[in-house]
Image 1: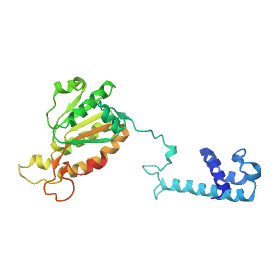
Image 2: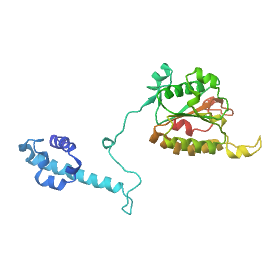
Image 3: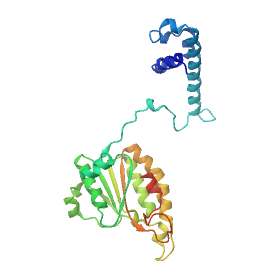
Image 4: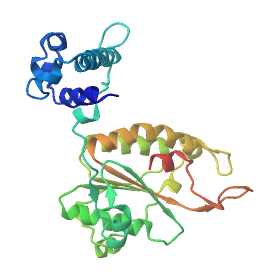
Amino acid sequence: MGNATRTIQKAVIGLAEDELGNMLSILENKKYLEGKIPQGKLTSTEYTEAFDKILWSIIMHKDTIKNLNKNEKGKARPFEIQRISDLDLKDPEFFPTGVLEVDQKLGGGFAKGRIVELYGMEGSGKTSLSVTAAGVAQKAGVNCLLYDLEATYDKKFATILGLNSDDLFYTTGSIAEDTLESVIAATETGEFGIIIIDSVAALMSRAEFEGEIGQANIGQVARVLGQAMRKLSRAAAETGTTVIFINQLRDNVGGFTGPSKITPGGKALRFFA
């Protein structure tokens, strides 16, 4: 790329949208670039050739993007391709966990609009950490919702951790399909800053709930979680809701390769978290 092309690129980048719409006029008189490029260079053969080449490429580029944003019938697609610079993308914001060392390692706490998976051995503090984070969020005026699937919520202990139980939104449940549909619906409202699901291991598929003990139901909760994650991740991002899934670690029975410990519920949650 020559110096002329680079110079013109820098000048063109500063053009407004309505100016870009008048590319043919610019090709004829170059009036929009007066004062940005010395007149002597602007009229030289080198700059004229480079100028024409780059402007035509921009025209072609703009038409290509417009066509991408329409379907074969000429109707607008449900999504629009844009430059990042044209979007109001902001840096991630965080809910502090209430534990300084954890916040430092996570860059500020639990990211808003994201799915979080807290997993570990029994008694490792998964529920305590999530409840502490919810308590910190409450003090900032944020509504928090707990899905107590294990039915083990301890109001007294939660109060010690800083949670205001009187302001906590609470529900129980166990059937994976119903619970995850409820979580998605709650996330879509945007009314809750933090939603906690305690825990993934307590979820059971409808078939398991209606069946008998000992009946094989391998992979059903993982399938439901995989479907839910695709909806939930977008809803969380759009509403800025942090969805915390608490999970367990179990021995990888029968696994001769790979990790010795695994989390129940399949791999979808891990990838989306």
